[in-house]
Amino acid sequence: MTSQDTYIATETYNAALDQLEAIARTFDAAAPDMTRTAIIQVLGEELGVWSDECRKAPEAITPRLVA
Image (cartoon, rainbow, N blue to C red):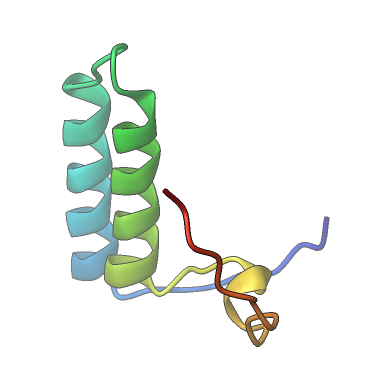
């Protein structure tokens, strides 16, 4: 894991923290995937923090018919 300091505008940072806190306070154990998705959304859309995998070109996918 590499260490990289990133500085974000204080208002944006605090708004994202508020959203993350709200997600944590309303955690639904029956839907943990929704919690993860909400956290990823806050990190990406509010703070511009994305996984390295998001930069990579998608692999060629062969479509399949699923019945």
